[in-house]
Every structure is written in structure tokens, then in C-alpha cells.
Image 1 (cartoon, rainbow, N blue to C red):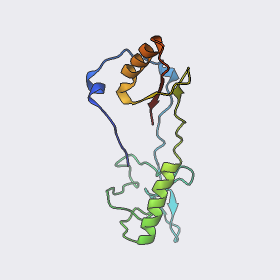
Image 2 (image 1 turned 90 degrees about the vertical axis):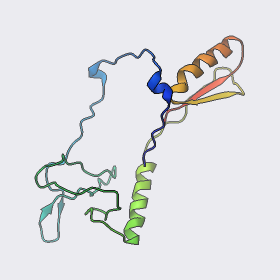
Image 3 (image 1 turned 45 degrees about the vertical axis):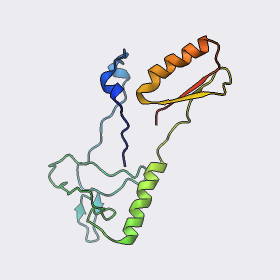
Image 4 (image 1 turned 180 degrees about the horizontal axis):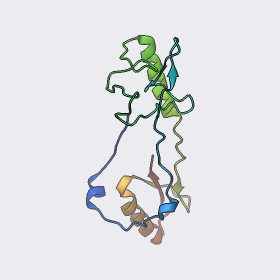
Length: 154
């Protein structure tokens, strides 16, 4: 599951952004499948679009229309590896546990709290509220108020 949290300020607000040097950006190239990745019991080599990488639990991506790598996609739960539709309870249990393992393997850093004065009050923000909250916290600190700030990013 993917949750996209958004708000109107992102669409209607403006703020200066430093444009990074192109060379400093990470390489986001995707290694697409180019051929079979599984051997059947009879020795036939086939492409299994639902075969998972044991380290990342990710499935291979094939460029649509690549000869020999065609497959179906859809929202119904698939059999592990083959991608055939499955209503088997044991497969369902495996798929639920696999999805949970993928979530569990996401590295989320600890929340950074900006608290220079040991404040008893924390302003917690998310999304486009960062700018206005930071400005308000700075004003309160300038007025002598001990106030902490944290911003959820993940």
C-alpha cells in the first residue's frame, strides 16, 4: 500500500529552491529484465515476473512488449513466483508475510528534534507546514520562549 499525503499549500504556495548540480543527483536507472529468470522442472527457461529477489523481495521489471517477457498484471492476489491467480490460503499467508517483510525492511531514520533549550513544548509538523512552523518557532525563540520543533518526513 502507498499513502500519498498532500495538501493545497503544496499546489498553491511558492518558495525558493536551490537547483542541485546534475552530477550530484543519484543514479535512478532501473535494471530491467532482459531474459528468462527461472528454469522449470523440464529444463525450460521462462520469465517469472513475480519471482522475488531474496534480498529486497522486489520483483523484476520488464519493459512492456519485450518479446518473451510478456505477462499479465492485475489486482487479484497472485501465486508466488508464477503470477497465476491464487485463492490458496497458504499462498495468501505467504503473500501477506512477504508484503509485511518488505515494509519491515524500509529504513526510516529516527525523528530529528530541534530542541536547543530543553523545551517542554514541541511543535510537530508534516509536509508544507515546515516553512510556517519554522518561522513561528524562530519568532517564539527570539521572544525568549523555549520551544522545540520536529518535522515528520517519512
